Image 1 (tube, rainbow, N blue to C red):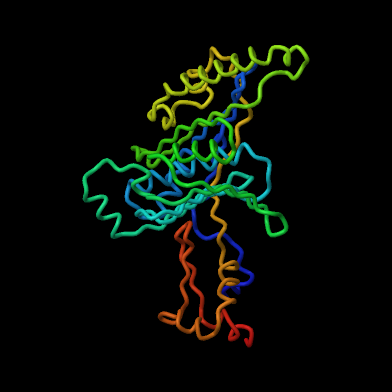
Image 2 (image 1 turned 180 degrees about the vertical axis):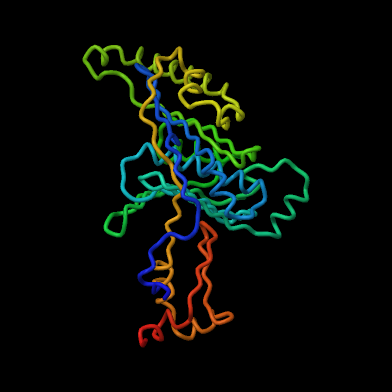
Length: 323
């Protein structure tokens, strides 16, 4: 006998993947610089290939996954941290989120007519070509009993990295540098991110206060040096599975008193279940449910993992309650 929908809380048949060293935090001792190196590895391929997107959209999705994982890992929260882009381009909606435990998921809604026209143009496609004009939002959602924290900015820049840096410049008002990459390799889709943030420097002593101008200048020099070193990183290095994170960071910052922190795991994080979708269906009227029936069943597809859930009409609505 099949499990009733309201009791079926098992995950669907999707990849059960955990990447132990998905995010590697680090800082430069004595300098106002901290950062995260994000490398989801095979997890990127598992998430992106759930959908049959054009390579340009999958690349944008891979960069979004790496970015949201890196930003979420710098916060203390319980719940989910999401990146949402809504624009008037071929990708009208993009959503990537990461839970406090490192669970990642991604969804993109595309306008096929606009996408076909863009692909037919033969031009080198930028992230901005895909999103068009609109807004970018970053949101921390800690559940219904907690206030949501959200920042929204207008889409600015040609790349997702540019859009993210514009967000931090205007919304958070502190310096942040980001490099994002995503490509389809022989091993499948790979994505990655290197994120640097300038943090407050100085020890806060009276001596520091007396020499604040000097400390500010030293901090600016240290920040610019870190940016120059980070700028030497190539996409190939960032996406190389055979190059350990610690070794890559050492290549970049070994002369800047690099301190590598405890890495954080990332995982396949779609949170759908038949029980959740059954709850959604319970909010529809019987007439609406009857119109959803095809060949005797109601089929609902999770937008994130693209898994189909099938419900017998008798399982949902007042008909189910009567049974």
